[in-house]
Image (cartoon, one colour):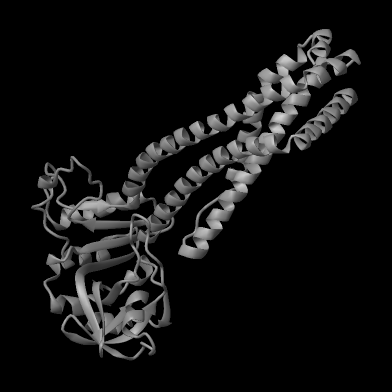
Length: 415
């Protein structure tokens, strides 16, 4: 064992000496591996970033929340819209029945969304905002984070008070220099007092569920302003922690079929939506994205590997005379083999490290300039090390075997 370690140490020193003696060639070799590693790690990090962003958007919707709506979420190119177009919208009476009878629900809320509204304060205005009219428990179900002011009191929610809670973008647009709390804005033909401002969330990459451009008002107020059934009403149910979504969905379905008097032979005339419908579609999408990223990365790695293999063949040819002298002095095949393998692996590891540093640098630059977090996980560091070592072994094995099998006399004569 000691002899093997000694041989490996000597091989490592020989390999480092060879790399130092050929700095230009070493630099060119590193360039190919660096680009290859940077490409595959960059692609995989971009995929991870995309997935994390989408999963974060899904978490905002609520991983333990059920939604009663007219339309199901599992759309697609072959979506049978004609099956759902004549369904009734969830009514407020449905909400009251679910709230009164459902035992597996932690919170139940009824909400509707009025799009493309405009809010005004003095000479300032905020256009293309969404106004959500919701019952009191929407605070806990949507995890609204109020950083300034307060939420509606239960009395305000029941009475339909002329009060509003603004998203961060709306508040900044209407009150660039003033404190918004207590001020009155014009919205939906009413003067509403601002009682709260939500924390800025930022927009999602593909699924935008941000509250930044949303204004919340009590449902009792909203139903006096518009016909709420024309604005995609929804019943939101937060399931108790100890209850599974399947149990809650079963109870919920039974209650609504009973309330709507649906015969056993007929299908439901409502949809029970949940985030697993979205995550299932995301999983299918990411199978394709990961495959595409893997193919791009493999081609990049192959380019780097061919470059290393070519350099190692040149290195063996240049040092043929030295190999002959080493073998004549008693060097074993293992020593010659390990010398070139270590040189190849060292080249790839250094190139991989540089590529990883470049990826981290680009991620930091994107975050600083665009305020967008790019995920470069610890798994990427492990993957870089493993890939670099594998590339080095594969690229260097044939040149190393050729060097180890040389006849010492013929090798010495080759000079």
